[in-house]
Length: 279
Image (cartoon, rainbow, N blue to C red):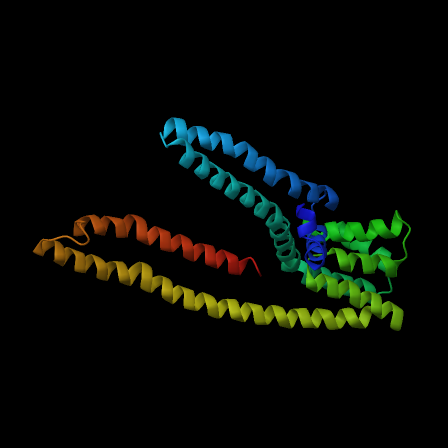
């Protein structure tokens, strides 16, 4: 049923994301889960929710039944959404992991190509020193196609470019393939790509540095200046008596110190970690 709803362009796009996400379960098996899990979730939740609403919360039968059906449907939809977005989350995670250190891998490939190694020998040499697990996985699959499945280098590179979640790695595989077809060697293309990636990395570092400087100013303003101003105002209001929205000003000071400042600090740390993970 769900598969029929997802036919056409969406199912093909989802298939590409699923393959690039690195999930080992066959795609058709995963589609079966999309059919079964949401329905099973709704069926399992419905009686449990009805018992809770009718027996424990003492809600009348009809409202309890309707509420249970509604919440079980929401649970089924949530399970379906989770199954749909899980490959996309894996896809994005693999993409950023690959691109975080890909520049060093491309530099090594360019060096090995410049001394005359063929593509199969280059991949074998890179795998001996590569630490990035996701890059290793892509290169191992590429080498598997050539050595175990017996495919030629051009076909293997084409398959690898369709399999990777990283646009940069896809450009790498496609560029090597086209260079081999056109001029017989990918060395010049690899040199150009290394230069381009270095320039993009410099621009990214400049942008992150500028962003961190702005974040630091905002952080100082929100977590240092603003709490001090708020506490001074609240102390003055407390000395004059009265409440703010029914809350004692001294209690608000405790909330600012123990809740507001730590929460804002945590949010800033999450933002900084997200930025630095791109480097």
